[in-house]
Image (cartoon, rainbow, N blue to C red; front, side, top):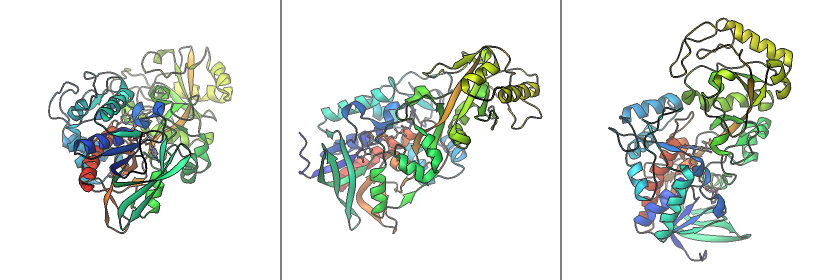
Length: 464
Ligand SMILES: Cc1cc2nc3c(=O)[nH]c(=O)nc-3n(C[C@H](O)[C@H](O)[C@H](O)COP(=O)(O)OP(=O)(O)OC[C@H]3O[C@@H](n4cnc5c(N)ncnc54)[C@H](O)[C@@H]3O)c2cc1C
């Protein structure tokens, strides 16, 4: 039984990857640790339980990564996707710290798959968790329990009290009652605000009503909001997020990875008016999938439809939902509730503009359209082989980037320029320091692991 009236050493708010890394590191540094997790036991692990991999720098092949991935290349990749919107010192700290991640994770019970090849071509840069993020988080919880870390489920941090730039106490709701929990230090690891539909609406307006949330409904951003209200410095802006196109039939929350639609580059995408609106073959899918959530969000009604023909089947990872299927474009339009004449015209114009080329989905091939707006730059083949298939698409929000500013010791920075001595942050709640915009696959878990470990250790020292 956890006694909430008893002050603890390190209080960790949030039981996802960042929170558990912080808790394990704080415990290893000798602190008494209490993790407060808003979700019930069955849904512990936040968005982290949906993940598959993390991105690691390494100087040569390892048991779980091929070749090498240098700090220079990693940082250049990050600069490219963020267009420079990153704090270089924190980004380099993340990248250097990533080199030690897999060994540390294995020491906590995490397991990895042998290096992968396949659709996402990530075997060189990303280490894949055996059993996915769910297995990783279960291993972390097992290690936490074995090491005497206390965990309280259905315990939501509602507010925090800071006194003279120091964390004093948290207001926690548990089993319908509010408690004041005092601690020597707090690690804020309660994720972003992506599941807070009102907050998304504040940022995006009415279109947010049509967004689906790929991860946990428990990331409501309450702690983030409380910290900002206490004078903590904000980083990032509320509209920046990771958003992909997911199957419109996915649930409102927690659909996870199996709802992502990966056939965009093999066909065309039209909006509800039956019109194409972006180059589906602009670049390799792993480099482009993260822009499609935003593109769909900008379309009328925040809905779009990916259309492919039989030639595409077997060339992409299918979603958990079967595609909608018809023997003609007109038939498909009717099933998708699109105007049949318009869709037929769009497909006809697309087919007529396709130049002959040598189709190769593994490279930027020469199959492209000519005199078509928008163009399709690669992998353009006529949609002429029935059956035809359609996937309805909605914006799927993965996580938001608005967060709290931190320094290299994961200490939270105040808006007035001071540093909060015993208040730390890790994971999504501070990821915006590194990811001002854009996304680099696998860096979410890297940020959480690197900063979680730093935050946990620092918090243990701060309360010693
Ligand atoms: C479908 C999907 C796939 C993804 N795949 C990958 C991937 O393969 N690789 C990668 O790097 N990233 C991936 N991400 C992003 C990744 O999930 C995040 O970057 C990472 O998990 C963030 O970890 P975190 O611990 O900060 O947040 P979370 O894992 O979301 O944990 C936050 C925890 O805080 C709890 N909480 C929230 N509010 C409170 C409160 N007020 N009080 C107490 N507890 C609270 C929540 O219940 C939750 O358990 C994916 C995300 C999704 C949704």
